[in-house]
Length: 119
Image (tube, rainbow, N blue to C red; front, side, top):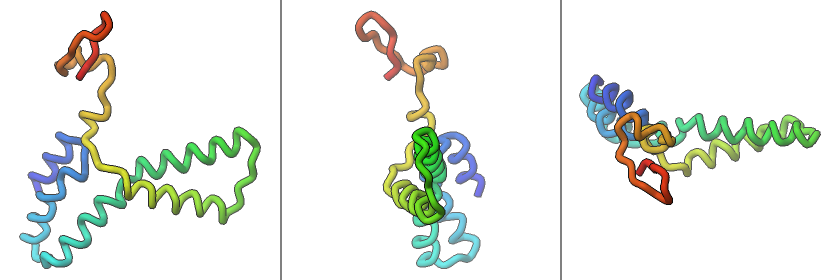
């Protein structure tokens, strides 16, 4: 389990740990058939950040425009957000979280129109 944890902390991506997690679970006695079905499904559905962001954004906009959302509509928003999060690719935070200050942290940079841009 240590390689999976090390990969998770170094990449900030649960999707990147899948091969290590499969190995660890199979060594622990779980059948290969069960592990190869359950773990990829769990990694895919476990993108809570995307689903949470979409739900909060929609409910915020509804409140900002004074639109009443009944329970059924809120449930539909949650289901739609979860289904959408399944289709989102898992990427490491180190790549997605870059900002203009990354060149100070050692990321490679290039010049573009007179300013430094991280690549």
